[in-house]
Length: 442
Image 1 (cartoon, rainbow, N blue to C red):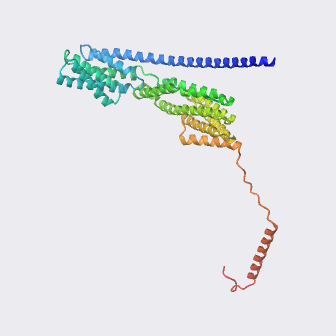
Image 2: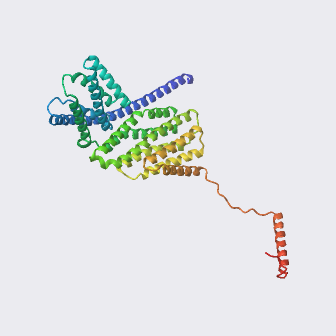
Image 3: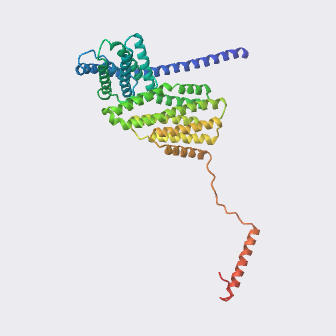
């Protein structure tokens, strides 16, 4: 009967494992779908802002071109305004300059070659080819300068023979459109740079907090598959980091050209410095997940202090986000980071092998980077981490106390000392019996 029940038990255990794997898969799908929903919501908001800015800029550019540049079909002014707005956030001023440069380059090459070669299909091809080649040589890569140079060359080669005087209005249209686009971004509808940064950094904070806690639990239970999933999750954060860089570029542009946002400059610079170290912390966490996976694969001992230290690091990240959001002094973050470094020192003192030692080093590096994200100078951050880690090591292996114990002299040593003292007294007594002249000079 026992033999009959054994396969059933094995089958039941396999079913349990399959159900557990299915549950984990469902949780991952829900987590990813939730993150995708939040990202889509942020994208919808950015899309709405850019659409409003582009529509407003196009209307103002068309109105100004009609009233300032005289009668005619001034389609290039709103087109230039839309081209200035509808680009990656943080590159609008650069795009406007590239747009105007491309228009000027296209006009110069188009007019020169049209005067030399004349007009026609093959002349249009030659003009466009040379305009694109010149733009690529100037810019070094594709972009608005290349596109505008090629487009302007096409217009000059095809429309200029039928519509005389097209070159100068084209330049003024591009100038009006580009300036209007910048004015809309800087004065009329400037975004809140800190809000943009908060929303761009939110996914990174969430991933760090959740995955560091997940890594700590995986080390605690020695679950190699779990640490590997954490590693894959950290490896999939390139898009989030790219969005953070775009947000930093856009926020820098806003606090530079928008007078209504100049009071945010200092706050932006603090945020930019912390974002740089936040990216380093993401790389540190990825390395820790990799070392944890390898240590478990090699069956290395991982003291429980390691998982506790990683958990403290995740708590410190969450606390830093809260304190930065409300403008509080990062005292609690500092304490949590000290606890993380102290636990790492204890784990190292208890005994770890090669990959475990790398994990300890990664923890200390991550703690230092997090302190620097809070505003600490590099030397101060390293000093705090080094002192806390040393205190943790001293708790496990306290330094030996030097006891000043005077050794008891032996019998022979006491006899020699008495003989030396007796000989010294005799010399002094003999010297005392001599007259002053007979005494040796001292």
